[in-house]
Image (cartoon, rainbow, N blue to C red; front, side, top):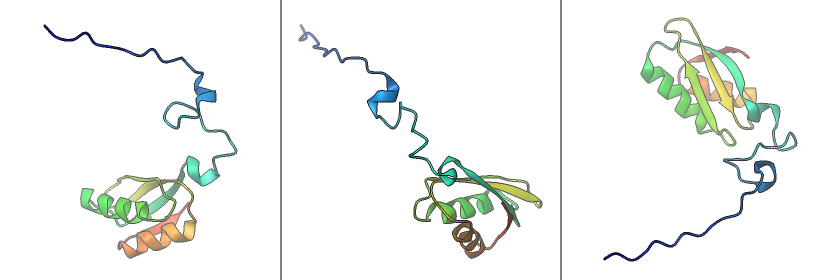
Length: 104
């Protein structure tokens, strides 16, 4: 015969007051415009490996929480960057990866 399971009841707290990053909505004071996501145009990407190279280079920047590329092979792809960053730092990271940032 197995031992009975014991469960602890936890109080329910409104998400906006809980302060939990996965459940609550951050206040406007905590977010900078870059933290919400900034889009850039990138040229020279032709395949999934190109995408991974750019995402890895940009994600390595201080403050960047995520970088995602929407690939348009041989055309102008879209790079979305979240977290505090500067356009110059993103431009440098993309260039170091071997590609060109064309605009924001």
